[in-house]
Length: 528
Image 1 (tube, one colour):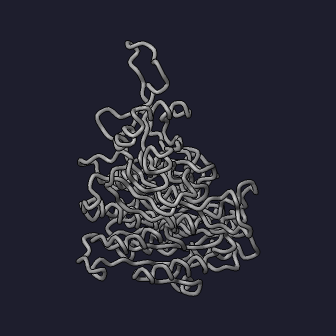
Image 2: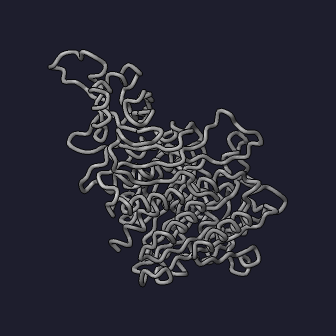
Image 3: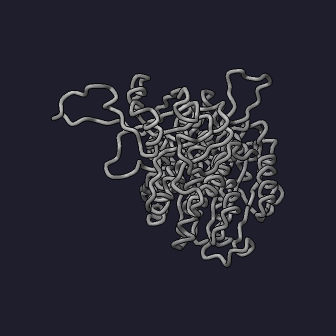
């Protein structure tokens, strides 16, 4: 797996004097007061963001006029390039849209994150780029700087791919990005740059795993890849193969994996703050991620259209694994354990069937009604194991249900579980730029999953898809010890982006919810 190929640094030199290939400035759209009458020029609708003052002075105050002539509107994410012809040291000034200027405040961190990404992606082929986006020198400084730094690195991401011929039109990613700040020696700023690099490495590692074709990332090879990276990072590693899973009673993982010639795995990763030299653990957090390396639906086979995207059905496990690797570098005072159940859901003569009754790790018996509801089967085993091992909080993430996409779309994840803890997860997601929305776990949904022959059925016994996302959450609740605060994050939409690049998302795996998980661990380390 690769780390970010773009390097990140700080600079406090006058932006007009920076010896780089391009200087990026922020540009706001501006509305005029109706009482003042019509604008005299398109330039009146533009406003340079803070940080661009010396660049504007070098252009004798005509920079917005020139940008307007080039079609700039200041809309969020818009990128306009302007040759400087020696006006400033850099040969290129790039204006990136930030939308309307916020009243009395800097742009929101997510606005900065997406703007930095759009600019860096548009500058592919450049060696050195400087970002002079508005990073306020006040209490909002860390969040703004973190957003700009993360956006720059994530916007530069590109999956290596498997093309056999060079692509002449495919320019190399930006080699280095310098973020302009008031004081490059500021310890707060240095810490944010270090953290952003670690976080971006985790996100891009997740993207690489998700984007790897499923014939190259089956459960044994996925487990080997995760285990090798984890050992190198100093994490504790335990890998259960099919024999160990059978001996341990992991009926859900075995049932889903039995239809494939590539046998299932359960990978456990452990971070111990005492072993990392930062003191005794204040809390214990369990992270569980779904690792279906390819999902055909099994006997309840999916439609062929779009099935190729099911290579992303292991995005939850990839995110948890990459988060543990980042945690090993960030060294919080929280003990974190990751559980990654891995299987390939294939139709064959040995596949599990609708009508089967499966005994799960915690002893509960599940009636299978739909083999395409396989994620909850492997997750139930892993969550029960996590609770048995002991934890103060449990977070599980998975591309679990199409119902999440129907209800919340492709950008907002659904979060279900313990109410107060779900609110903490939502706050962490908002801070990281990975929004979630709380969903209920109604009693009537659980009643619809009653089984006449087992403790619970996998899905609504009437095969009713109403509240499908909620059915997934209700099922998973059966495998969480009653006194453990927990949250299920359904990333069926946000985990994979099938459209053109936008903001800091490239086409393919997004890395959601790595940044949420890391933000949440930071919160638990700070506040218990």
